[in-house]
Image (tube, helix red, strand yellow):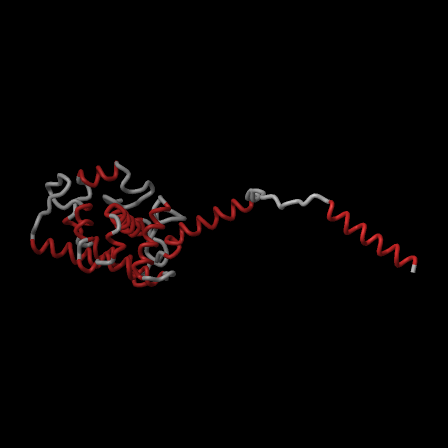
Length: 229
């Protein structure tokens, strides 16, 4: 019994001691700073998000100017991809679908150029007097009913940059061919650009309007094909 009483007394003393201890409130601490490895992981994920348009682009018959992006400014790639996804109401996009979407732009561009030639009209824009400024043409192209998708109307400058970069990518392949050499195996976009280039004589790629736009940084460094190679 003596041992039991001593154990009970120790238990009571311990409980009383806990009551006498000051109550400690949990303190709010700042979250730990990301480690260098976490920073690198975030940057890699961000680069992947930005370059996904480049990854989805059809490749056969095209040589794009940059390894990680279509356009030098990653935000331009993100803007194009996001706009297309929003227009289609889809979180994902396949290369085949993107190939169709981009090829359709050049099919429409070819039809528009042929129409202008048939009508024998001269459009004056940006002080261009001897033919059609390519930038004026892309503005006309965006207004075509067949290109009614909201993403093509988002930014005239972005649309022109996309159009000219894709055209340049096909001309780059023409200048420095690489496998596959059989044009029948090339992507629909490449063949659509070929059809457009075959009738683009109405456009003057040496005009001052385009030159001024390029000087202002309208097209990224590293582009190919604008004005010929």
